[in-house]
Image (cartoon, rainbow, N blue to C red; front, side, top):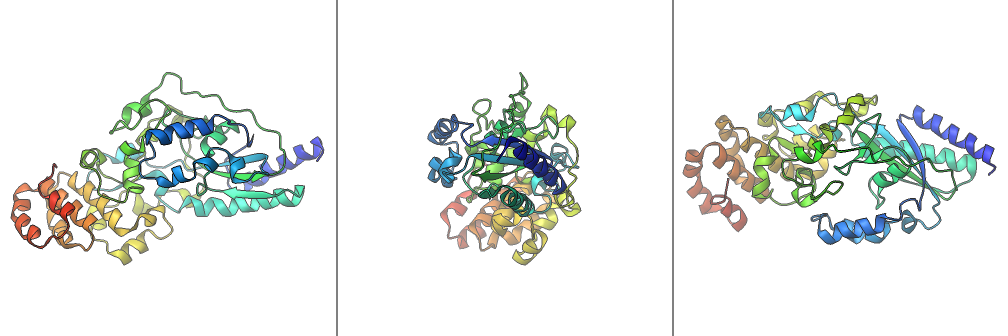
Length: 375
């Protein structure tokens, strides 16, 4: 395709992307980040991926887009602003409510972005006769460093993409194509000497700037981790019942950010300050109904109640205890264990009264150990 034709095509793609609701657009070559395989290998060797074994299993493909598709020559990166209306940091002080990460307070962004990416990719295919593939955070593609190469922003010291226009609040999607497109200029790292994101982390999850150890990350434990929350992270978890926004929320570049223009990404009222007292009483049907279409639904009721119970245990409100006692007999050991911890935190005397009866019927050794563990 002639240069003039390519320029016209890109202009059309940008116009259509904006009409579809995308806020950022950039192009990078698939070979623009030859440093990624080594950086990824180092992170995996250090164990920073925790129990997310799929990262290690896809290491070879993840490090180079051409391993995903050998014919790919260019990658178009798209961003949608999901700037929140409510600061997650303010919610940490409201101990009787659950703090849900900004990205999960409405519809699952995968569902919103993928269809729009397909439409844009279809336009590219029709206009240029190109082959295309779309990705939204579900394939082994390292969108953040590629977005940096495409000029959308830079990976901050918290490892998340930072934009001069949208701060830390960009969802990313990618279109791979076999068409050679002129790349945009990569964005220079612009964190300077600021370390706010590193300093605010309640669990010191950053072994160094630009490095994240998931084994210490509350977002990892509340969303990806399938077992009990490790004891040392329960108090730092506070009322974070799904995800953690601390390192994103304190970024100074957020002063230029705006609330998302996408209605499906704006907070649903019931997700802004959900009462822990209501959430802990959800059954499976109620959980599925409340979180239909939300990313929260993916973790299932047991893991969700585990998180809610940790939040209640940190609430300093003994009045919650009557709501917890039925969960000492919950079918899930994960829920029973978290309920024990919460009761012991809120009302040690009542916990002692419940202890012997619970031990008499408890068959799970891990749950039994909760009665004697550190709170």
